[in-house]
Length: 170
Image (cartoon, rainbow, N blue to C red; front, side):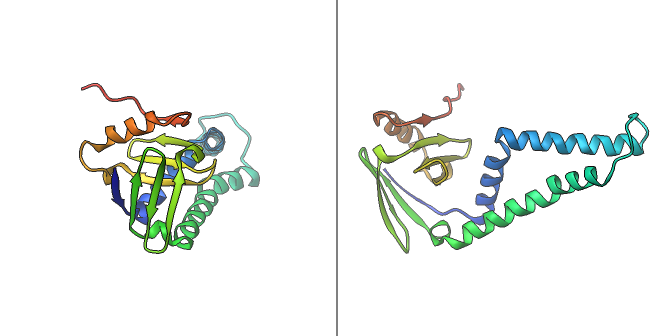
């Protein structure tokens, strides 16, 4: 099976923010920001009997709600624009033993046995080469009816670490 795909910067940003903020530690950090916001609002609106917020509460809230997303965005921007393979159109051929990827500036062959894991998200397949690096494939790149064929191929590969969604009942 062969697909052609290209990932826009907007799609890439949305995916990476989603992956970043679904991590348990990021959820804890967001809860801390919510607690700081509740403290500050509760004090000034007089609905919580809390001490007056200090510089530390304002700083924590600012760092979590403004600085952190800006740092994440700038990292995503640098990553997308530093590697030309994210921006170029790709042709990916999925074979029973390997994946062949061709872009304007590269050609890569990956053996399935060397793949760390494959994760299916609502709109994406992520084929991880290691715990941090993945081939990102939008589901919209698959021809109609070929997603199930691709999943069958994945299931047929021995010892492949798969995280696929369940098929929706209609």
